[in-house]
Length: 64
View 1 (cartoon, rainbow, N blue to C red):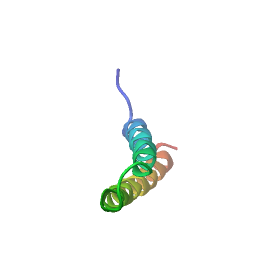
View 2: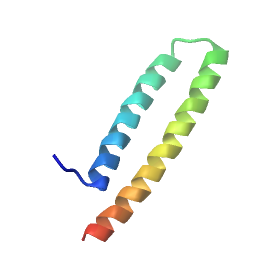
View 3: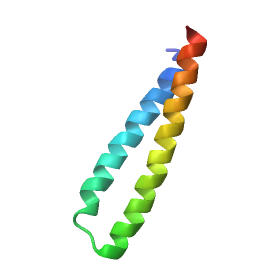
View 4: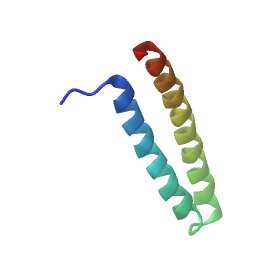
């Protein structure tokens, strides 16, 4: 099965979003120090998701 780069990025973005959701749930049950570290990880995930959104948008324009 051959998939486009845009489709792969979309799947990866969805996986990152699921990881983010799990981390947000986990953050509520940990101590302050761990919550700070989780917030930093969530920030990195958010950055990666923004980059994926931008690349997906460019890919869709190129495919059109």
